[in-house]
Length: 208
Ligand code: SF4
Image 1 (cartoon, rainbow, N blue to C red):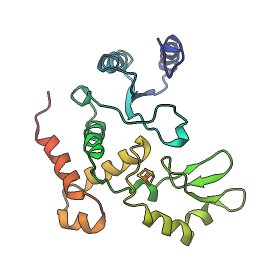
Image 2 (cartoon, rainbow, N blue to C red):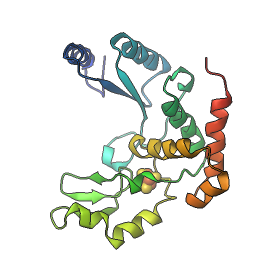
Image 3 (cartoon, protein in one colour):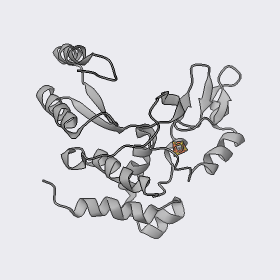
């Protein structure tokens, strides 16, 4: 059975067993992609349960940095199988994002992405370069006027749905959902009200 296109399933299982023997906390990541089926996710849930390990559910992203051949978006038919509340919201909002929902990008104010050549990029989804570590210290790049201007310009970028960025954005709104909407709309841009409505609507549905 293939893992990331390589016949490495048995090795992954062996690694999990070995790490568990050594009492290491293990989390695996499952990427919803064009080649996986719903049954694959059910299988992974079985492994997670059997070995009592963590699970992250990531969605396939065709940003250039991932160097993937397939360009396009995928369907997520697994939300009802998901156990983790925040990850489920991340997957449910993906459909709305595909339909055009503008999710404010706040993660770029918290994390960045460094390339092997020292380029400090805005994020995983964009090729915008904030500076290079061979020429400047990270702090000076991160606090520069140029970086501040670029960050502000990209709050409504909405170009990607990379796990490391967009789950962060959803988690912020999930935490702040009890604040009055007009305050959130002042603080953030995009379809903040719609996003909060979706988060709350999901919570009003009794879990299985
Ligand atoms: S939505 Fe955010 S993380 Fe994605 S490409 Fe745009 S700025 Fe980067």
